[in-house]
Image 1: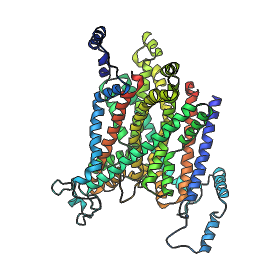
Image 2: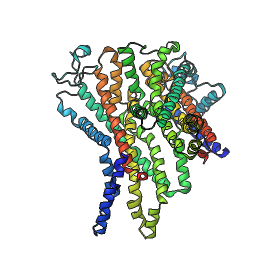
Image 3: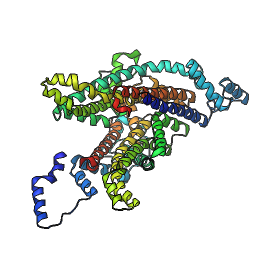
Image 4: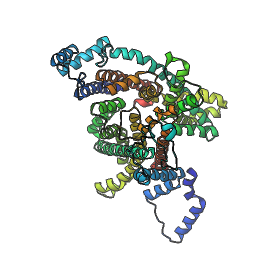
Amino acid sequence: MTDKLVQPFSQKRTAELAENLSAGGEVKGRSLWADARRRFVANRAAMASVVVLVLIFAFSLFGDHVTQFDNETIDWDVMGSVKELGAPSLTNGHWFGFDESGRDLYARVVQGSRISLSVGLVGAFIAVMVGTLYGSVAGFVGGRVDGVMMRLVDIFMSIPYMFVLILLLVVFGRSISMLFVGIGLTAWLDMSRIVRGQTLSLKNREFVEAAVAIGVPTHRIILRHIVPNLLGVVVVYATLLVPQMILTESFISFLGLGVQEPDTSWGALISEGVKSMNYGTLWQLAFPLCFFVITIFCFFFIGDGLRDALDPKDR
Amino acid sequence: MFNFILRRVAVAIPTLLILLVASFWLMQTAPGGPFTSERPLPQQVLDNINAKYGLDDPLWKQLWNYLVGIATEFDFGPSYKYKDRTVNDIIAQGFPVTLTYGIISFLVAVIVGGALGVAAAIRQNSWLDYFAVGVTIGAQVLPNFVMGPILILVFTLWLGWLPGGGWNGGQWQHIIMPVIALSTSYMASIARLTRSSMLEVLRSNFIRTARAKGLPDRTIILRHALKPSLLPVISYLGPAFVGMVTGSFIIDAIFGTGGIGYFYVNSAFNRDYAVMMGLTILLGSMTILFNMVIDILYAWIDPKIRL
């Protein structure tokens, strides 16, 4: 990664640039985002992850159109003797085999992917929205308001949220919407701290001062100078939040406290796979597990790549 | 230092109160009382039962009695589902188990993770370093509920070396897999933490001085670099502890070890509110207090934090 970053400033480029300048040519400036995009595209692990992730999203969105089976129909012949009859096979069209109750596992995995991914995205979206708003307000207003708001975050942060989440799910029923809200609302705290810190440091930077000095109006300073810098951090943490949300959801669903039948998610499917592992129906564990692990991997790599691409400290 | 402790306690107390009141309130608003069943009980019987458990008192009095019970007699109340069992019985039965594999996992995570991190930093960009970085990335995508089943698959079903579950009074064969499943992700985090802080320390001025004096590498690392580079690990002990407690939900579910997590999840299924509330308050306040102590300890060791 690093040698790729250094490359543009290699001697040859510098010489070219100097020649260009002396010849009176115009130097084309690179914007913050063009620069970041160039770095990101150069990161092979991140780009590969993007491709894989796009495929997984496509699978979760359109996967059910490819197969002739749906996720509800129970094959009564297979149920009860899943080990003998339910194995994955290309000939009968049940590519991932059957699940324990005789449903097509491929259709179930599509359904589970859809729910897991949407919990991840929606949860992260809620967290990013609430956190960014809260953090930037605290940072901008400053003073006593900032103190009170951040003390509150401290307090919320030290509440062991897994207990609260389970309590919420038990008391208000185990629904997906409760899961969305519960997971999203516990995850915004980190986000708000990060955004506040960024806002504080940006407020006093030279380029903001310079902008003030030459008379740029405040809203333009915010839009042109603060928000783009903030956006980088927000995007990076949002990408890293998604796998965390998926992990939390899977944790809860694995325990059986999350999504309920007939809905399913990766965590619930993995849990079913584990329960039937002893009977030798390993495909029930393997397929959801693969999707889960690969997705988390991809999100981490993309988040890492974005951080490398967008981190202003790197420049 | 005194100010720091004061500030830290000032955060911990409201947190505890919020946890107490919130869990109590949630339990009260929960649909269906503890004695609603398929066949409705006669009103007379219901009144008697409510009177026995003090459920006909006003809410504030119930909360107050509950708190006084905890404070004076360490009594977390009865289980509404199992008449012959109190929350204290459950704690007495499950907690030693959780504590046993929790502490062992904790030690494994700190020792192995610390050693791996230090070794990776000393031999930066060697195969050992790449191995350590690979392990830390791998452990991130293999949370304990993925790790556990894979372990059972390999060591019980394929190799047949270890029993697939149960506790059996804490025999070592029954402890190995829960410990691996629980400690891996924390081991990875600690390794990453130590690696980066060790790298930072190795570049600092006092290490350069030590090298300039001509001290051998061994002495530099053991005497000078090790202590400051292990400091950040202390701040990780709090989150690690929380992880061990919540991780026990999964460990008990997969390995059937019968720790506190088993009872927690079970009571969530049975809607045994009294047990849930008791365990939430016990484990929650332990977490909050433990985090507070760790923070204060860290600030005491590393004065930079006190600001």
